[in-house]
Image 1 (tube, rainbow, N blue to C red):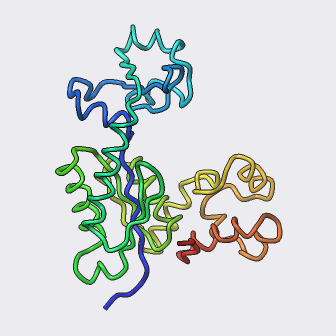
Image 2 (image 1 turned 90 degrees about the vertical axis):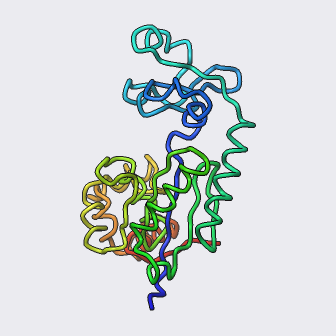
Length: 241
């Protein structure tokens, strides 16, 4: 029986915008922006709004042309609604896995250790996705991998590539390496813009190059945090409960 540790990252798609669409179906398929408390800037964007080039934090007054030309809808934020749906989301995940580790209002890690003795990881991911849609009405993506950092990467791929149908199983080592080679080092969870620049100066530009770096060398030149990231990219979970 399999006992390897495996994680799933379940992330609600465009959470605030999806919540607004749940209670106003006329917004489906249209570009939607959710504004901050004082309606001053964009705090959430649907994929259609992102496609228009609207940035997170962009002032709402700059979006008037998008409203006129593209039918952009600007919604005032409703944090009571978002909090309630987040609570229901976490409850639904708790019915799927023995251990749920919330990470933010719209995403959580699941411990899937041993689940593949009963069902394939890919099938499990689709079961969770379908259940959240059925019980709450919100769309999610699921990334599955042997470490939280790789699960984040798998979730990124599930969002980016429509052919995945919102679920990516990254437990296979060769598949991990193929995907790591397609992403920049700066796209890896925990690698910000400053770290990205320093890595580039040392010749590390892709996720795969970062994964193949010597962890001790990384610790010497950066920190133990970046060293843990390298180890996680190689399937060794270094998370702290």
